Amino acid sequence: MRASTRRLRVALAAATAISIGAAAPVAAHPERAGDPDRIVARTAAADPATITICLQPLGKHDRKLLAPLARGITEVYGFTVTTLAARELPAEAWYEPRKRWRADKLLDELAADVVPDSGCQAVVGVTSDDISVAKIDHARRQQDGTHEIDWGIFGLAYLDSQVAVISSHRLSRGKARRGKVARRLVKVAIHELGHTFGLDHREGEVNATCTMNDAGGTIRTVDAELGTICADERDHIERHLGVTLPVVTAPDWTFVETGKRKATKTKAAKATKATKAAAGGEEAKAP
Ligand SMILES: [Zn+2]
Image (cartoon, rainbow, N blue to C red; front, side):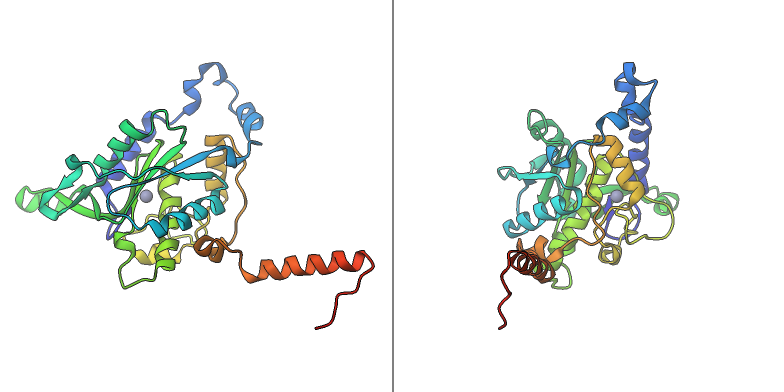
């Protein structure tokens, strides 16, 4: 979960409970339970492109963010990404007091109506409408018995599931240009997908090379991250999905935003061409 201000303890607690209940995916295959190492060894070589992540535009959304989002997920995880036909936001998710949409209700609908028979490892709802979750405010509960508040978020996912939802609403603040919003959206998607693969938040200081930082609620945490997954996160996801993920130390954000590789790659390609020409007995022509 990415909160816009502080950690969402209630949702995290709920997610942790789900985690405990589903802590051992191996248990679903009891015949394999005795030798988990062999399972890893047997399946770790699979290509991540065999995994399909589906983007599900929901309600109001910026169509121009969908392609960068898809490229970003492929850049970092190596997955195949497809975009489904847009859907309306379900009326039951509307939270009238704050005039926004409850993210958990959106996840429930995606799980019930979109995931079955979709062939998607995970469905990521994408909207530019504002989304929120209910959060228990312990201080207010002690003061006046009121304990539930509505909390705006960047994204939400159930732990070890097939559903996530992300919103660009809070990522566009400060008149951020679309490219910057796209980067932020990719980082939030990478993070929420991490939850769907069973990863919980990291403890301690923000590690910019990792994705499972608790945003601590601020966009600054998202901006500080490199948009990569670090080694222990990669290990977990590889075991969870039985694939070998690419090692990406710096996503090509130019490619993510525009679909074109940045200049350094072009220069490298030119150099390779020149080398080939030289090997073929030709001289590279002087300008
Ligand atoms: Zn999170």
